[in-house]
Length: 127
Image (cartoon, rainbow, N blue to C red; front, side, top):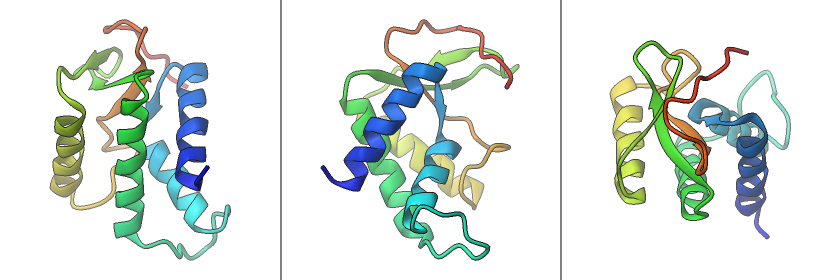
């Protein structure tokens, strides 16, 4: 099992336990892994590699059939699934990433992965 497969397994478990995983948190997990399982003062990870691995993880998570992708409602309280294919979802994330001009973070994140059985419009608790 490659480290990417291990991260997919870890994030699928987190998604199931927490009810959702946001794109920024996947990016942080990737960055942590690329920095030797550490958050150093100076980030040694390559932003292009972070993006490539993050999108590969999202694709694998979606291909697992265990989760769906979406975003928060305008008021930020409810999940809304994207009616899209996996390929279109990856393109949408990539386009959003490009339009931001930086990595998606907690402030700019609009991508949520949540368990397949979870209904749309589920209220997201603020933690």
